[in-house]
Image (cartoon, rainbow, N blue to C red; front, side, top):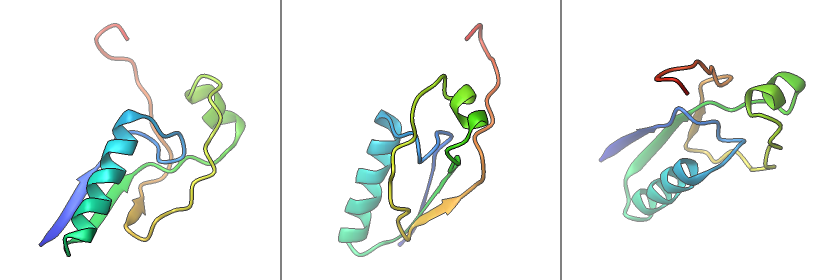
Length: 80
């Protein structure tokens, strides 16, 4: 089966959602499925540091199944 997982969170700033998607992708691959993960991949620059409130990017290898969607785009919603 061909499976696409989509994340609004940057792959270079991993958190709970990113780790969950990574675990799902790895399990689907182990089960013999074709997997693609569509997610932002922010460069380690000043703009990313501001967007991610000073968090540091994690030096992750880009897995073959990751399709980079460019930079994260943040916007305020629901008072956040």
